[in-house]
Length: 103
Length: 122
Image 1: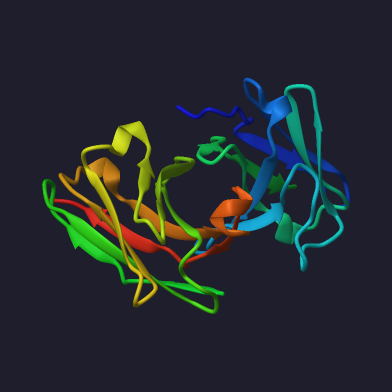
Image 2: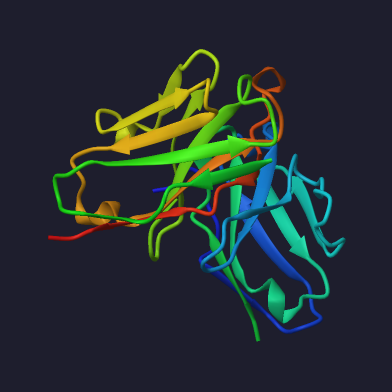
C-alpha cells in the first residue's frame, strides 16, 4: 500500500485541463512533489515544493495544495502529456500513481 | 549531473542482485542517493537511501534485511544489493539524487538514472 492516495486514472480531452489529486494524513504540513513517468524513461520532476516548476518544464504544469489534498494541474493538455504521474511527500512517501489518458 | 546505472540483470529466485549507480557532474559527498523501483502495474516504490559521506542508510520496512546500500566515495558510485529475490521483485530499479545537499533537507528527486531492469524467473 502507499502512504499517499491518488486516483488510478484521469482522462481528459486535448486542450482541456487535467487535475490529479494526492491526499494523505498530515500532507497539509508537508512539501509535495510531482513526477511524470513515461514507459521506458526515467521519471521526470515536474513540480516541487507544492507549486514550483523546475526549469524546462512547460508553464502548463502547476501545483496547488489545500488542506489535506495536493493537486497537479496540467493546462491545455497535449497528447504528449500522457503517462503516469506520482506525488511524493516527506522523504519516502509516494502515491500509487495516476495514469493520465488524453482522449 | 548524471547518474549512470549498470545493465539489465536476469536472476533466479533466491539469488541476489547488485546494481551500481555511477555519478558525475557534481561533488558526490554531501548528497543522498535514493533507490526506488517500478514494477509492472505497480507504483513507484521507495527502497531506501544512503548518505554518500557517512554511509548511513535508511530503508523501507519491507526491504529491511534484504537490501544493502553501499557507496564508494573515491569513485562516486552507489550500490544497491537485494537478496533472496522473488518473482515479484522483477522491476526497473532507479537511483536518484535530490535537488540539494543533505543539509538542505531537500527531498524532491531532481536527477535520475535511466533505470536497471531486473528479471526474476526460474
